Image 1 (spheres, rainbow, N blue to C red):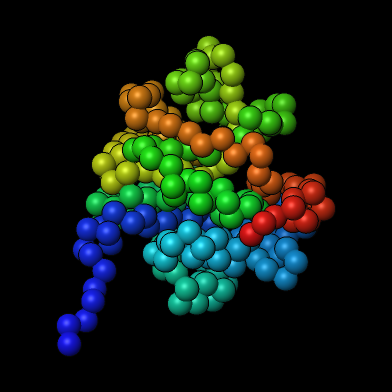
Image 2 (cartoon, rainbow, N blue to C red; image 1 turned 180 degrees about the horizontal axis):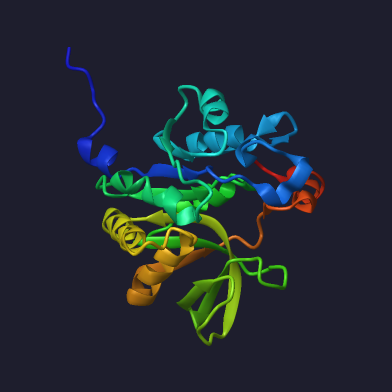
Length: 253
């Protein structure tokens, strides 16, 4: 009897995932001193929630960038995902993406995710389903100030991607910190990271590499509006309270 195997083409086009979780999270102060992805919400860590969300959307190939308290995080991950060490985790987050450059060049679509986000699983479902070579999740409702990473539009074309935008634009939303890149664009992202590291710019955030691609190929970038779904990034002690009180009760998954 011949055993049925999944088509090779399907395996090659299904996304693989990168989760950035190496940072110290020092802005949380005494609220939490371990990796932020181990923050617990209703008995489940952010890590557990990421893994469940990825499984729910059919993504079972994840590698987590670890750094701060790497062994504790590896222990929590176990055999559920791979890990990639960023020994320079006190540098900018670009390094945490750069250490995964071989994965970006694997010839597969890539989901790139910040680790410090509590969110509704439907966000990932929308991202995975969205067509396009470079797809961002955008929330049109954002807090004022310099903290949110802003996705800036002229009409429906993205023209900037920074906390403090340089380019004139009609409107902006907040980046959730989740992206989907086709295989070719993921390889270009690895190249952009290489250029910054070669230039000694290891102090910057990974968004700068994405911004370079966006400005070079604006027509390749699209977005999914997730304004209607609950989520929050967790950077400060007050974000933990917001996550527990305002976000967690409204999550569908």
